[in-house]
Length: 356
Image 1 (cartoon, one colour):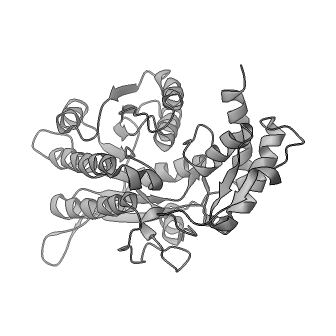
Image 2 (cartoon, one colour):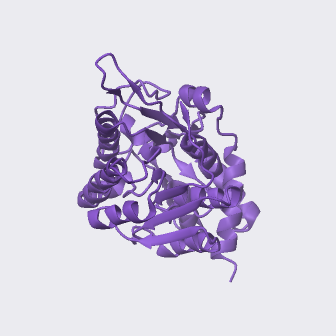
């Protein structure tokens, strides 16, 4: 692998107002005073825009952060970003997220996840044109959803992923295929990361832990799918950020094959907690931490507010990351326990939503 220095570099992060993107940008701005971060986000209302604004406000306090409001699918805009700022590292996290939303709004996924990613790849490709600044490493978000209903656990990057059960998963697998083609054709170092259920403070409200909290606080019923028998490899956001930063600094090597053509400088990794949690246990820990933080009253009747229901379309019974390759290449595995992570989320939720 080739070392990529981040100091004194321009880094282009798409989806910068998103959960993972904003946390990566914040960590880089805190740790590397010499970096310049160009962040792009379309600020859509798929979920509460106030959360995106809250995340961005933390970034605006840094002088070496520039924000562009715009759409990944706008090729002229993406081209102009590459030409004006000449980023050496690109982190593509901008995408339409969510499995269930892809069932009712497939067009949003084609636009953002396919056309948008194509525009990023084209920007990276033309960065190698004469007189430009070549992109040293493209890091992009894939998803554990690509494993579909894979029966073998833990999920390994060597498993076949040809049977997606949602359009969202299909677009993420497509991103991996597109990146491979561009790495092969244009020798662009790229690394795809299959994220496993990322959670934490200021996370996405469409994720179970956030939605459960909102409903419990309002005295509504929560539904636990597959009768509580689902398992999820919950990964705390700080662990994800540490993992992504390590990946950014190690690009796949450029080398030629026997035919004299480039061997694609391409890699894909699982990045998860490697410790799946039963959804019912997860809900119980969340309830305890919400009571501890003062979001719910101490005498809250949790049993009266939960309902065990069948599986949802597009969902899978278990996600479980085999992170052998990630540990080997980057010397890191997530360390945050589910209780510790949910405690931090609960304390943030109390401060953000209940401080008035």
